[in-house]
Amino acid sequence: MQRQPHLCHQLADDRVYRVAMTTHSGFYRYDLGDRVRVRGWFGQTPLLEFIGRAGLVSDLCGEKLTEDFVLTHLPIPSGFAMLAPSLQEKPHYVLFLDGAEYDEEGAIGLSRQCDRALAENPQYQYARELGQLGELVARRVENPMARYIQHALERGQRLGDIKPPALRPETDWEEKFIFL
Image (cartoon, rainbow, N blue to C red; front, side, top):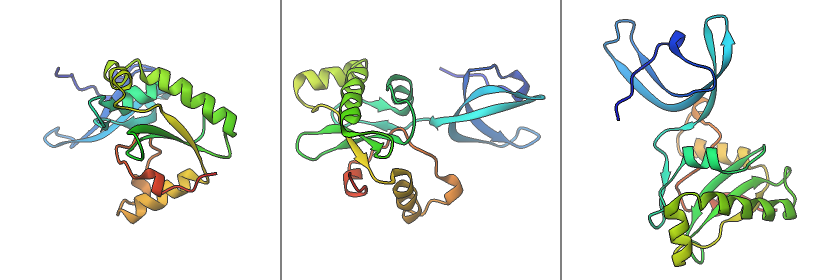
């Protein structure tokens, strides 16, 4: 499906868009891969909220979870929350949470809610029913955003390019965080 580009003044409140940069003449375009939501206006300038990266997919056994699906389906109220696959024991997903925001009981309840929400993806539900995917677990993490930033910097990202993730496809995040 081809989508029609919009200029800033053509955007609508509470709609989600991808950001593309272009020269004044429109000759050169660059898709940033960022997804933003219009949250109001300052004069004629839209106020944009970053909501995630386009095209980010995690797939352990055919479930193909996208960041958009995770952002719109998981009941995460606030703070750091990142979903990532794990190959430890039976393949499953881990919801990494800010340990300062959640106690153990709250994290367990949230992990069950999120597992049910992810089952709205038919491929995820099928993989769970077949036993290919284990139940989602929540892990409380010490200073998760600081550790995420540190890891991104070590991979060569610039500080200004690091954004809070909702989904990461790498399977080694349990080795990067310190658990409470």
